[in-house]
Image 1 (cartoon, chains in turn yellow, purple):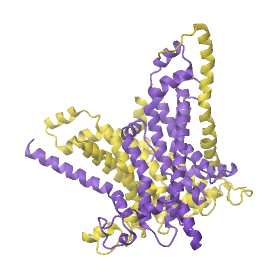
Image 2 (spheres, chains in turn brown, orange):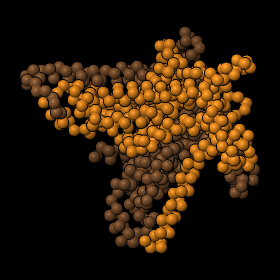
Image 3 (cartoon, rainbow over the protein chains, first blue to last red):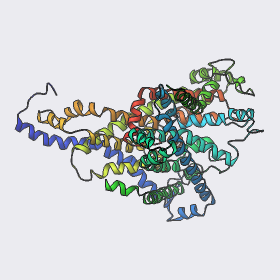
Image 4 (spheres, rainbow over the protein chains, first blue to last red):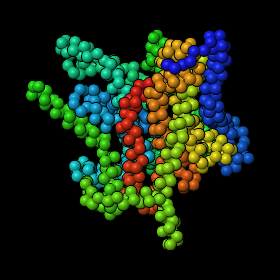
Length: 310
Length: 295
């Protein structure tokens, strides 16, 4: 602020009003243009496309088909299979991530020399590119020369190689494991941040009252974590349900269609079958499901009311 | 320290070490594999520690396509996907940096404007951005592809940058808006009363204070655009224009899978993120605090 030259007050005031408006508009303009062209338009177009037959190789032959795309999807057994598998994939991923995330956050919360190093290492998977993890997973879970089979064989857990990525159940389990490996750090970060704000006096008082470690966890830690866990679970559920790359890069939805979820289903309809209208309709169904799911969750957990009360 | 406390401490360290081992193992194993010669990779039982250390996998990836084309013209063969690795790497760097600059600059300007000026509908913008942030990429990707085709931009790096802007801008907008809301307006007003112009105030006072928010937004954008596969897969076709993520998946194209190359490329892809992570770990956690990072 030093060195700002004095300006006569009257002149200053007038020029400010003018430049304020200009600056405000000028600053807003790039965002408005970008948002209109690359956010609002694509979403609107995605909804519109859901009512058309749309083959990218025949751009001149775009026909209005009403609700045909939706009917086609609802009649498609693969859609229902994908939905079922998406629920399995999401449910297990979220369950494991939440339990492991809370447990590891509590482990990382202890004050020990060198804990910062462990914190850093355990958060790292979150920023590892999905392609990298998928490649590594395909390698360590390789059925013939993978290290996981080797380890399990030498430990005597199994007596013959498991075909991790080419049997339906195991492929789904591997994909869930990949998701848990990559995204548990997200839960850890959120929970750890909250743990650090819980006053230690609460624990001291409980100890004096003779509460054991488990009691203290149930009576103090868990209630304190409730809010952050609700937010984390909602966000993670939405993103996991929509995940495409984690599954597609690991299994391509296979073997067969046994690891399809709705995102893979929409991708295959658009990319392999060139039915962009059907893909768009699947996308609309995904959004609708998520809206319904979120509303139900918010109602059940009473999360919205707390928000309003404060 | 009592014996019991010491024992507890040892147990904690053992537990931490075990968990860290499990978490880091896939990456460590990838690194070891990438340093083994081709035949050793197929040893059964696998050698845990490479008996021979070699850089041949890295050399194959980093020598560039000219070397292959020279060798290929003699034999009449075609360059393998790995010949394009350097091109892919450069593409990913360009696209990632381009996206990061656009998303952070556009969102910073707009967020400042939203929190300091009045215009109709301004309260709705950040919430719309948050909704936009929840929309899965699979919904955006096909309409964006058609738009890019209309603009004759498919198979260009610019199309990827625009695609990534579309998936990162909403969250950057939300983050910067939340950030500017928390920055007190009094210093700016004082400077304005002292006669500084809006632009000068923005440049000299607002930007420096907003730096942590900008860094958080930039990190988020860097991670998303470096990691994306979907847009690259749908938008791009020529081998030399692919981003890294799409390119390395072509290593599975042939009948013979070269795990050494694959693991070397996964190490090379992780290194920039690892450097970023170590340099900015503090900011990363701060960014998480400001709102959840998409994943």
